[in-house]
Amino acid sequence: MTSFDSSPTLTAWRALLALAVVFVMLATTGWTAVHHQRSADSRTLALASWAKGSIAGHPLPDVDAPSYKLAHFFATLTAAQRGSLADTYPLVVGNLNGAPVTVRYRANRRAIEEARTVEQRRVHDTRLSATGRAEAQHRMERFRSMLAEDRHFLAFDPSGRGLAAEVFGDLDRADRISLVVPGVDTNLLTLERTGSRTNAAPVGMAKSLYAAERAARPRVSTAVIAWADYTTPVGIGMDAALGNLARRGAVRLDALVRALPGPAPVSLFCHSYGSVLCGVAAERLPGRVEDIAVAGSPGMRADNTGQLHTRAHVWAMRDRGDWIEDVPNLEFGGLGHGADPVDRGFGARVVSAAGAVGHSGYFEPGTESLDNFAAIGVGAYASVTCAQADSACNDGVYADTTA
Image (tube, rainbow, N blue to C red):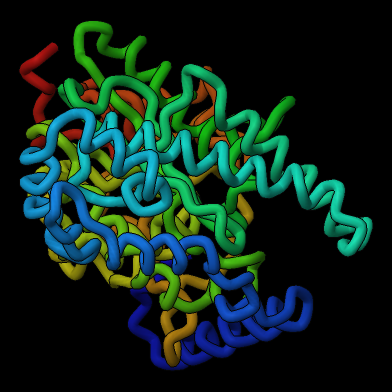
């Protein structure tokens, strides 16, 4: 379906169809606005405590200070002082852009331990309903899994539905960094899955991409981040049809990318509603972002790549069996996310998704979709397999010289 037909009548009919789809979504899934989520009590209390805190007789910096200023602050501290802050204010330091990566890992491990303890108490709290205790059990088990020795979290907040970002590889020494930006219904309980659907969840996506990148270019040191650190829509409802959560998430994504260590180029891999966020963020992101690759995209809130205002290479793919193809690609009165990124007129480099199954199968091993993502992530652009409709998708881009 193209979004570039010049017929006013056809455009009007498509707008009506788009509105009809949205109303059906609302009727079947309900209003899913952010205010229905639980309040961020633990985070709020942690920030208030930090604001009153001090170290070595000096007040602690504003958490909203630029990341380079926060990095300078931590550089003036001893290792013992950095560790003390991580242990005393884990929910702040673990999410503080500018804090050293290893300090954030330490803080988030402490925060996860504390969150697990809270849920352990709730499991046995007779004041809770059976449903409440079951949810507490589920969260406790998730936190126990997150505390495995080989796991490293760059962000963690248990408030509400929860936020997190997990790192695979050595982020401090990486030659290239990839970020997986997931879509709707992402939270701490859906962060990872077991069984046959492992690679449909953010952690599974990132682990799969990390393994594929290492196989594609063994000599290139890569790091992959499962970035579930923004509030996503709940279901395919009003929030999913609007750009509000994408705009808020774009601010968080930009802040993280600017705080990443070293000079390594960054590639974004944006799935479903995550591609809406990446489209909104594109013009604000720093120049180290070399690639924005979207899969199963409902649109990037732009009519073409020129409107993204980015120098990054823009890549797009969609599996033939992906239901997102049936979503009207229009923006009307704030509803909808604009043109289809795999349309020729959009201007993205359209790559093959052969082997992917449906909307959540793009990161499955053995698929051309994953192989193409890995090639993009390590800068092996000449190895990217184009979709039949775009046989020149890798023209004008060059392989990474670190190969």
